[in-house]
Image (cartoon, rainbow, N blue to C red; front, side, top):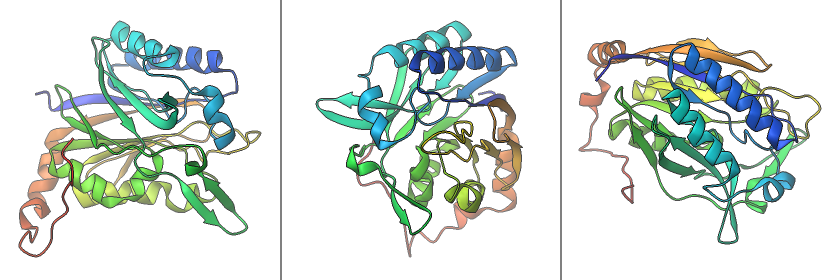
Length: 278
């Protein structure tokens, strides 16, 4: 195992033209690989505008146009590619799905968003993913030569139990493609990432679409990587850009040694466990 590797997060500008989104993703992921990134993360809904009115129109089967391209990009750059998410159609149902590809272009996992984004903040924002989407029901992890990685999508990050289970199963990096908005973004986006990182002594990375003030759903942006001490080590602004973080697993081990919460848990009093093993 290599104890250090470079992670890149692509904060993509997403338009209504799928071909443009795919082309831009291709270019930026290739650019990230050229900068030495071994794992590259794309944002939630990277091939389509985010919104219940768009999911059916942009939905694809997997494999399909977008995921076949992701497979090619991963293979040509010899990287692990966390393909943000796309609206997926399967047997008459729609899912918000993240596909992860290995350096050989093979599909490693398909994570369907477990927790659907159904919220209502009076006077600010109401959004109901469940109007069109179905929830996934599988925990998703994949192995790399560096570490095991756990995957969630956006709203999944608010559920601390998911992160705890991933950490318990050996994940040292958690990735959340997400699209927080102008209400929840400033309030909770960074806070939740830092919370998940400190709680579990892991690295946490988030990939947001770039902010587009003209879109029906305005993403907060600010894709971020947080270290196991809870420090923000890289953060994008609001616009399209690629940010990098050098992940150091020896540092992670040192943090766990200094504050040994993993061995101090009172499993005789409480536990968080997965009902179904993935």
